Amino acid sequence: MSLDRRQFLGLGAAAAGVALAPGLHLIDLVQARSPEDKVNALTRWGLLIDTVKCADCEACVTACHEENGVTGHNRPATDAQWIRKVGLRDKRTGHVQTLPLMCQHCESPPCVDVCPTGASFKRADGIVLVDKHICIGCRYCMMACPYKARSFIHEAVTDQKPDVPRGKGTVESCTLCVHRVDRGQIPACVEACTKDGGQAMVFGDLNDRDSEIHKRLRSEPSSQIRPDLALNTGVRYQGL
Amino acid sequence: MSEMKRRVFVLCAMLAVAGGSLFAPVHAADPKPVGRVPSPTVKIEKGEKCVEPTDVIRRDHMKFILHQRDETMHRGIRTTKHSLKNCIDCHADPKTNSVLGKDGFCESCHRYAAVSMDCFECHSPAPRKQTGGANTSAAHAPGSAP
Image 1 (tube, rainbow over the protein chains, first blue to last red):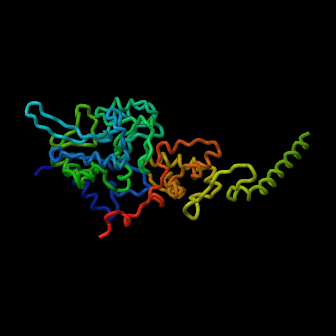
Image 2 (image 1 turned 60 degrees about the vertical axis):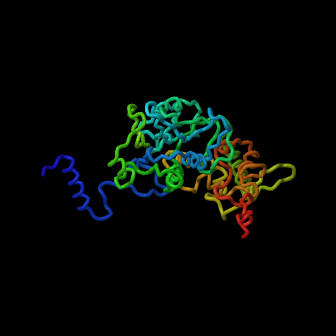
Image 3 (image 1 turned 30 degrees about the vertical axis):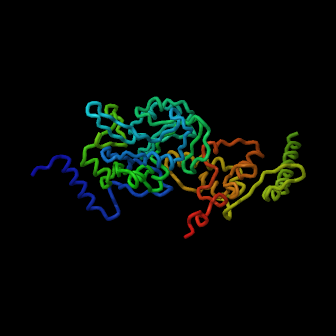
């Protein structure tokens, strides 16, 4: 039996871990965060969506818009969309499949690159957000996003959810339900898909080797949308 | 000449201290209309005391929530002590379920001081858990009788 360099280093790390006293780790493991702790890059939140299981329903869209208080004015061209169902049809065979599309929470987000004020930013744990306190509503990020994930709020908003402030003149998009994630819950779309949909969505920490999403991504084929852009998206798809 | 200046300065300082001690209790008490002078409505709906001493929070509440805003937004720190949601939870009027309105905790004072606040163009003025008023009881819902 021969060891390659990686295996040798792995064994060394395991030996070091064993040698240390219990409770003392060479490498910090991801732990549940208390409210006073800031987010850190040990975690990277992500989603895995199995388009084969994705049922012909709108459970994720309804749940998202309910959770975040996203309401429209029956004007599809300008109404905010945090998540939408996209249909793909194979022209030769006529096969149709649907998938939910939302902010892909890129590792190198183009929306952050182009933002002139720093309002569009990526949190240390990989969630891409808009700081609406700083956003001037220029909409460069909407132009830069290859996934058309962002919306502009054209009209005054009332009856916002206390956890999700929204206001006229700012850009917004999927926050991966950051207020729920910070409480230790999963995003509303994933919860709805598991309960009422096709159990097609998995949420978890892409850096945690023990998480379901990491195991699935490790053992099963998956893809990003527009991998040619090398954005390293946090949202991955299967069955495309 | 400089001696004269010093005397005037000392006199002014003494007057200021005396004036401060005279008027301090008036400021500390709840503002009440004195004659024709209008004053804001300060209704404390919930809780024993504020997260900071009254004089500190009156002067610096905007600094606390501005600091907390960046901590929460960018660093994900969600302590409640200085969060806007925590303010609203205690200070929202149970009748209107809001801190806005003529007698609303935030609006009445800001209107009195002629300071505009933009918080509620995006943030909800309602508390997270309803304190009453709009809360309807499920027991009275039709169809609940056997």
